[in-house]
Length: 108
Image 1 (tube, rainbow, N blue to C red):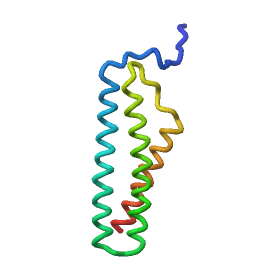
Image 2: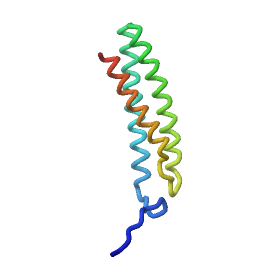
Image 3: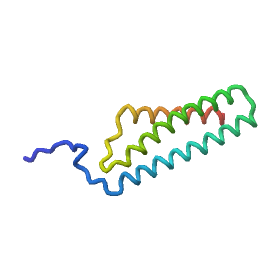
Image 4: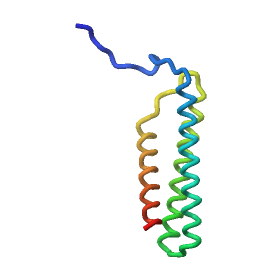
């Protein structure tokens, strides 16, 4: 019976994967920016207090996501980029969930 070992960071051949990942981060950031602009437009035309507050909070969350994405994009330049830390992955997921929630509030 052969023993299987868990893969480590140095076992992979990155090829074009870091470039594809970098492009995916940029696409996600761009789509979040478009949503933030549309939410801001909705707040300007809607005028309700909760919408304005929600859009302001969404803007702050977007800035946090932008910082996380930029940091990750910079890390992917290395020949052998490190794996995404769990804390960063959780923070990105929290930003996405918060943006989805704020978007639902703005539309509702």
